[in-house]
Length: 193
Ligand code: IMP
Image 1: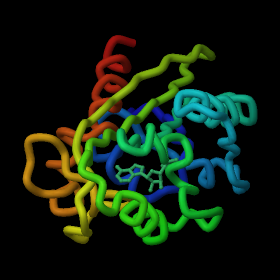
Image 2: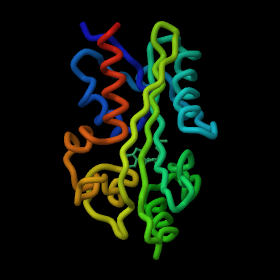
Image 3: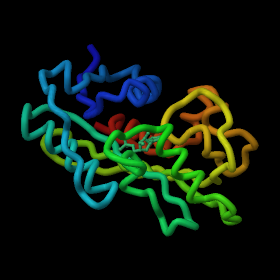
Image 4: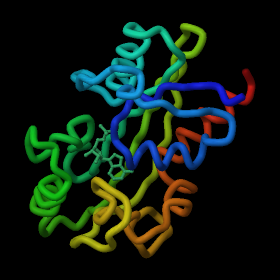
């Protein structure tokens, strides 16, 4: 029988990406499916702090094995912004189109386009917390390319590729992405239990 793990997200894109990797041995459940209908707080000032806050929120509430991820896009020429504020970069509406517009505006004429995505996963299993981190280096393009993926995908081109994340298949993105790398570590760890 598959073991159950609550994944502290209501983002269907993330759920699909991670189920695709982790799906064989674990059944992922959303907070909503467990009766947690409110928005899960994430107001810490680091990516790792936010991941931890979200997993603890689920654990404190319903006491089950669970994990949460938090991701930030760190742009070198913007001193690491939007970073932990990636979701709300252009405002509380948390809109990806607005976020991309603001990013392209702030990067207009900037030569150094280096950026990286960082994901931290906080897993609470058997009442103990473990963290896993994944990073992918790349560049911010000067305009949008591609329609797949979500968030900043249309303007992020990973190092060594000539397409953006939004021009890749889900499998291809998962193989090299920040979240893919963090999830691979999570999966390796779960196999040792
Ligand atoms: P969070 O991890 O949901 O807080 O994500 C923070 C912000 O980064 C949101 O605006 C997401 O849309 C964006 N984001 C997270 N993961 C990815 C990704 O894999 N590609 C592009 N944008 C992402």
